[in-house]
Length: 112
Image 1 (cartoon, rainbow, N blue to C red):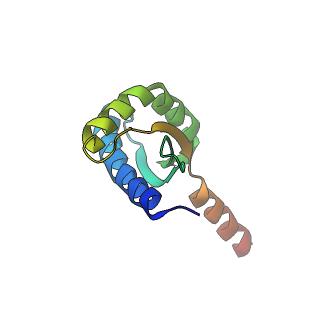
Image 2: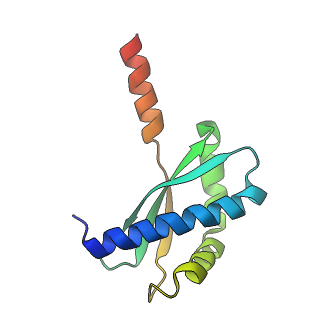
């Protein structure tokens, strides 16, 4: 169960990471739609798990690897945006959110 503070910080990081990835992603990922679907923050606010939806999903692993290479730069950019609201900028841990693929798979199975 997340506290109110965790929820507020999660939403703040989600919004700001979406902006950052939209701006930075233009140069890095041509023709790929990248969105931040969810952010979960640890109780001590030191680690943020950022869930990304990547379309087309076939390139998901490749895009995630590229994002993980640029984690420190992305954390620095996030620090510039949330530095006034947070004392410590959390470590970023990126994951692929495959819930849309899961839903699509169930949909396909139900239609058979």
